[in-house]
Image (cartoon, rainbow, N blue to C red):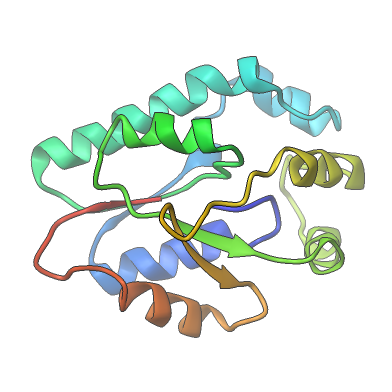
Length: 166
């Protein structure tokens, strides 16, 4: 989890590969209306995110029911959003990718072909962000290399226990 530009998709793909798990990019499950709204530079609100979070929670539940591991990249900005995701799998483990406004903006400015546009949208996400407490997520800085982030988060997982990851 983290705001746009934190590397959720990149880290998620690497983490899933290291675990031989399925990777799902939560952005791929936004409604066309949400994508259009973000592409126009308008931030999503809680109502916009409601069905999207329900879809992602459903994916966690489906993988758990099959006994398969899944990594889903999702902003998860607010505690209630993360609680909604946990309804799909109460054992959900969360990695929070933490970064400064300046570094996040720099990353977004160099990213091409993504619907998330504008510094105002980043500012909105940062304003909405409720950083998770230590009992809710593992927090790692995006200044670390992706390999180090994957290694450190993987070390917190219980290997014999199949879990969903977000």
